[in-house]
Length: 597
Image (spheres, rainbow, N blue to C red):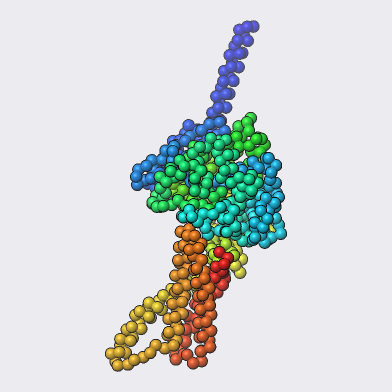
């Protein structure tokens, strides 16, 4: 009998050990199906394949209990062969926004904020001036980027520290127009997130950067991360950031690429990979323990619960500020870009597996997005991979645009979806009378013919008019007229330029000046010049508009006496048409509204 019991105990022990080992093997498999032990080699192979265009990259993969893989590659400064190591700091970019949402949820946990309350409850009286809809803007709208604000491009990045304002003053200076009713359209908004950071500041009674340091960085031991607009809250990080060079995604140097991000809660965090990983890992705390970020375990669960969906599909698109992204599984997190760095933080809240990536390359995607297939699997293996089988027809414009004010020409960018874009998740729907394509990070709105046809016509005529004017001035003014005068002089004839020729040259010169002004304006805005540097150019647009009206009025008034030939008449009419279309463009895109900048 004892022998039988002993044999039974041995078999039971062996069986339990095999189950334990088998279970451990299952646990050590990433959502993609790759084992923990293999993922490092796979990542290193990707780096090797892209070595020619890689500057510097740091990556960490983790689960709830440990760091699965952590490594760095390449150079923080290629020219001086300064390698990326554990001390190298990178910009978080928009991944910094997650610090805002964690801060908000901490205040929510303490009962200091209601996510569904009108945000004006938490702001100084009269702080907001451009709220145009009766539907109140709530914190949840800010989290979901559905507050309805148009994009801002002025004074977001600054080179001169002297131009940096306090957070409250910066928000008031560049307050955007509200162009959508709250809750109807997802339009990504840096300003909206910075406003949420200011609300944290208003409720807590301390500056936002101080709040983050005391309530996130210090509890997590993030000693190598800075959040202040000028990185002054961490001198070591500031010095390390000075050593970092930045590059294009093709590996070309981007000199002097550090900017002060005035709306700093939206994207100014800078730190090491290890600190970035600590923050991300705190978002996937163990089943039996609460996160170090919150007093209650349920707060983290609440934060990682959905707050917005892809239409009526029931598929989450946002989780209290964390974007929902579809790989083979549903993950959530936030990517980030600055003028010189790219980053990404993504977690699977079910398995507890996550990844953080940091690079010193602008708009980098191989490591920040494509490589994540190794961790979470490819979207083609998702249960939603066959959700959309054909691209929607028509023209679309990103909801993240500008339709009011002097920079509304920003809205010219329109998009026709191609079949090769079907390899990511999106849905096409109609909500509240708005036809749109819902994507991660924001909506694409379908344009009506009455919206895109005028834009196309104005762009074509404006570009054609500038080219036409250049040809007239160069060919006519610099070649034909001097040659004609030379010939007439040899023949002993002196022919004064006709009034129509003078008018035509003056009109073409006016249109060419407008084109140059627009090109200069584009350069200033894209190079992040302070708005004070180009406000005068909108004044110039207004003067040009008045001059065009005078020029056309003069031609109409003198039409019976000024023309000497049908050829001159045809030339002046052609020039007048281009002038008139330029006037329409200035009016259509409000290019003269310097006061609304």
